[in-house]
Length: 286
Image (tube, rainbow, N blue to C red; front, side):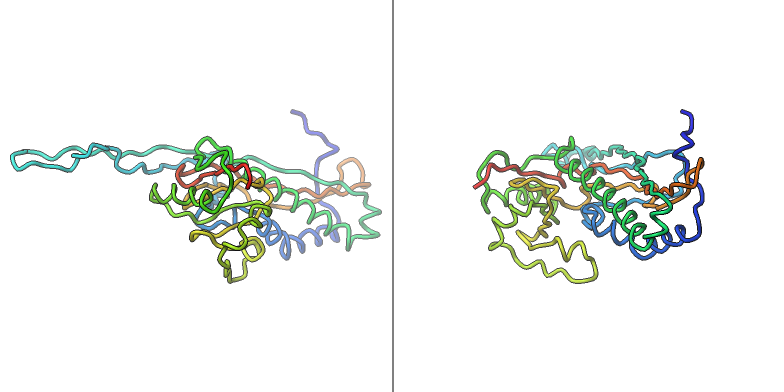
């Protein structure tokens, strides 16, 4: 495809470049990572960063299936047996692609020069927040509709007993629920039953979104999960593959100097890792 010269970015003036660099160093990473759900669910989401991976955008990994022989007598050796039973061990290959996400905003130079202190930071923060919202949408869609998502309860009235079924199902599968993602209205329904989250440290995401604890799991409040839907995440539920961190660039139009363009881009992908670590309950209400 031919290059569209009207959308080609090249170096801008020193004042604009300085503003971009200052924003990146002081605000951009914190802004995006505090807005991102998946980057803050330690244990449930595995972050894999391979910025020097080259042209191949696919991450491949081998996952253990453990011992696959299920016969009850697989370890039984009678006194007169001459050899042990063979027990099979299994693995499977999984992969996830890191797609390219990018967009830019063009603003007239005379506006930027007149109001640079306000306009430039606002454009950059808006770009960052908007792409972070896209990231959250991809993550929430994956954990609610992915092929490996297991339904724990469906079309029943929501209650504290029904809510626990997802946790119980994961414990039966020998995994411990780390996080329960709920809509604010669902959180309100069970506010009296929740233990304090007691989140400490400097993670703004958890301080603002970890609203309590149920059955030993941290409850995360988010509008990316519908009301009366609860997602249960245990260890190694999702693999997050990042090929390129969020970056900001800027430049002048190749044809004229009337516009300066600000671009944000990233390369990442998400895939489900362990099926038993990602469950969803859908309720009808109460």
